[in-house]
Amino acid sequence: MNKILLATDGSAFSDAAARYLIQSPLLTRDFVVHVVHCEPDVPGDIKAFIDRANLEAWHREQNDKAMKSVAGILGEAGIAFECHGFTGFAPTRIVEYAGTIGANLIVMGSHGRGGFLDAIVGSVARRVLAHAHCPVLLVKS
Image (cartoon, rainbow, N blue to C red; front, side, top):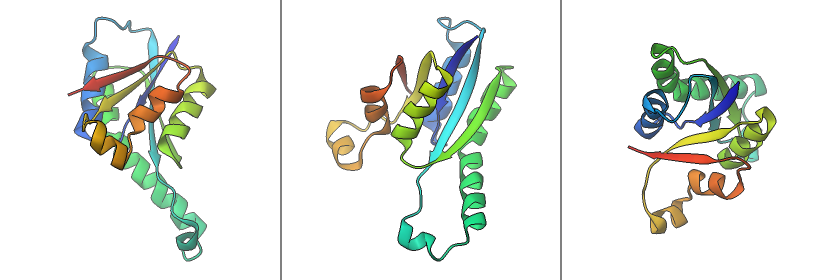
């Protein structure tokens, strides 16, 4: 069975990527989609004031919120999927998890801000493209 990692940030761009997977004639139905969201970690000086259990619960809640729309889109289409929430630096965690599961493809929605703004703000997609060990499909809505 093929494994596709669909990275989501909870945006309409991620929803467009999920819809592309459903509608694409290029992909067979012999795959499971691993929906992934990575919530940025809280800085260490802030962690000192927050109970670990509460912080973990908050990260879970944020991850679940971000994955909800994509999970709904895939579920309504009858696509097999699993949801995985992580904490940390998103590009690193996405690439690591793709390697762990032996992903055949990473799919991401592209915000398409442009080179200058991406250079300032940073682009998760650009970093994943640079470090992924499998093909990466960027879907522009």
